[in-house]
Structures are given as structure tokens and as C-alpha cells.
Image 1: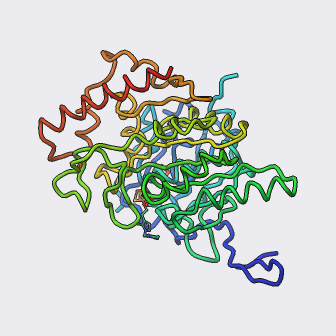
Image 2: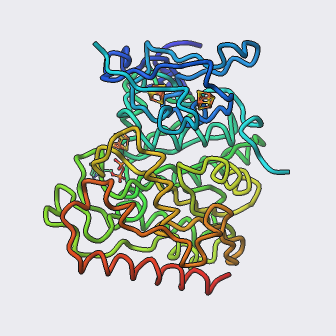
Length: 95
Length: 295
Ligand SMILES: Cc1ncc(C[n+]2csc(CCOP(=O)(O)OP(=O)(O)O)c2C)c(N)n1
Ligand code: SF4
Ligand code: SF4
Ligand code: SF4
């Protein structure tokens, strides 16, 4: 069953379902952009662990491009840049 | 076996593009709850930033089954869900997830009642040390000296020691955690889930908006709270306190960083006096002393 409600004993209850982008394209909030430099990456996964918005994915099968950032939803907070031990991630201003 | 980053599941319980502010510690905490318990977790959530993070019908910014409840009922509803799940023979970990206001102030009577009845739930207090969702008003968890929109000249009272109050409820499990130490938090959540009865976890959650720091520093600020000894990570099974590994070095007072390092990167402590600083330092020593008596 999909939709915004569930029926229990003939009573309609409001029900929300998990949705990517429930607050819209949050990438448009970004003032700064995290940029990834694969050469410096030591594959520690700390950026993946600490990204508050879950927009970093780890590519186990692609060591030459170990992480991907979904810029549609990345809010540019910079936490990933702060926790990266090797400066493989840097924060640059959006135009 | 020690838990490592590589052991953590990749399933996402915090959906990209939700309404949390950049660098939000509540999003981080929820992400770790998902990693720890996955689809076994059911949450009751009162008003607060997290209910905004969930977003508006028909979508939800979180993947957990969630019941949104009136403020002072989180633990009572969670207890009911826990019993219902047991009656139909389904395995679930029911969590009351509330802010510091929803836990220490507005929801306190229900929290204390559920703890005393030893209801089979986990209460997680996500502590950003003020009522953030309504615009940064003070709570009983706001520390001495901190600016909020209702303490313009800095709060005059000390932070209420909630983990200690919960310890005195003689419940089977009490722990503190921090968003900067996810492996420690996840291990504690899994341990709590394996214990029957009432479990309390107090999660320290530095908020860039209310504490006035750069959103990139959420994890660094949370780390400094532990490294200065201002936030002590411990767990207590049946009342016996064990200091957790990240806080172990700071049992030794000389290993603690000066608390100024923690205070000076937060705008909310910008105007504190020398006297308040001394009192805050004294509180760190006192809190350690009290806690170590229960080890
Ligand atoms: C009974 C009741 N009183 C007051 C409110 C208004 N209110 C909504 S959120 C909130 C503050 C919540 O603060 P806290 O529990 O610390 O969570 P945070 O927003 O910091 O995550 C208040 C007072 C309400 N929704 N219901
Ligand atoms: S800037 Fe923030 S939201 Fe964007 S990838 Fe880094 S941690 Fe995630
Ligand atoms: S934190 Fe830095 S080094 Fe570690 S995986 Fe991410 S980009 Fe690579
Ligand atoms: S005010 Fe703080 S806790 Fe609330 S959503 Fe924003 S960053 Fe998160």
C-alpha cells in the first residue's frame, strides 16, 4: 500500500513515507561546496560516517574514486571537510 | 570483538534532503541509531527539531517507523508500543527520542514514571542544551553562563545532572554518549537493546545554530566537550559505573584540555566572566568526583 494514509479498523490514519528530498533540493542551500581529491584519500570512511545528511556514498569497487557526494542534497555544512584527516576534501565557495 | 567503521551497515535511516539545518547533530544521532538497530527500531518523538526534520506529509525525512506524540507522553506511548509488540510476538526495540526540553523539563514526569515501572524501552535524550526548535530558549540542560534568547546575559543556573538522576532511579542501564563518538554510541545502543527493562542514554549534541559555531565544527565541538572533561562518557549496568574508553584518559585531571578551548569556539559563551569560568571549571571537577564514587 502506498499513499499518505493507512486504514486501520476502518479508521483513516495519516502516514508519511520515507522520501528523499522531503525538504526539496537542499543542495540549493549550499554556500560552500566540498570538493574531493581522490589522490589524497586514504579510504578511512570518516566523511561517510559523519556526514549528517547521508549524502556521501562509499564505492567499495572503485578505489580510484572512493567516495561520491550527492550535490543535489549536500547542504555544504563542511563536517566532512573538518573530519577528513588528509585534506582530501576541501571547502570552496559556490559561485 | 571491537566494532570498526567497516562493520557498520550502509542502509540509510536519515534520508538525504530533509529539513535539518546544515551540520545538525540530531540528524547525526538518528543516523547512528539506524546503524545500530536498523529495522528493529520504532521511535516515539515529541515536538522538537526532530519532528521538523521528519518533514511534512506525505513524505518523511527519516526511515524509522515513528509515532509523533504530545510532549509529556513519549515514554508512556513507547511503553504501550513495547507491550503491544510483545503481545503479538514481534521483535522490536522501542525508543522514546526526545530533546533536552522534552526529556529533562516537559517530559520529565513521564520519563521518571516509566523508569520507576521499569518499562521495556530505551529513552534517548538528544541534548543540544536548549529548546532549539522554538528559537533557542534556555532549558534545565543549558550550562551556566550560556547565552540563549531567554538568558541574554548568560544563564545564571547550573546544568541539571540528568544522567545521575536517572542512575538514582536504579534502572538496569544508564549511559552517556556523544555524536563525535559514533562507535561508542552504537555499541551502547546495541547493549541497551539486549537488556530488558528501562534504559536511558543521554546523547550530547552540539548545535551550530543555537551554540553559535560554524556548522563544519559540530563533530570537533562534541570532541572538545569530552577532551576537556566537560562531557563524561560512561555506562552503568545495574548501577555500576564504568568510564567509557574515549573518556578514560580524562580521569586524570592533568590530561584534560583547558575548558577555554571548548568555550571559546562557541559564540554563546562569548561574554562569560572570569568568575563563571572558574565555576564551570569547578563543576567539571565536581562532576568527575561524584561519578567516580559509583565506579
Ligand atoms: C505541550 C507543548 N508545549 C509547547 C510546545 C512548543 N514546542 C515545540 S518544540 C519545543 C521545544 C523543544 O525543545 P527540545 O525538547 O529541547 O528539542 P529541540 O527542539 O532542541 O530538538 C516547544 C517548547 C508544544 N509543541 N507542545
Ligand atoms: S558538506 Fe555536509 S552535507 Fe555535504 S557532503 Fe560534506 S558533510 Fe555531507
Ligand atoms: S575522510 Fe578523507 S581520506 Fe577519509 S575516506 Fe573521506 S575523503 Fe577519503
Ligand atoms: S537548530 Fe540545531 S538541532 Fe535543530 S535542526 Fe538546526 S542544527 Fe539541528
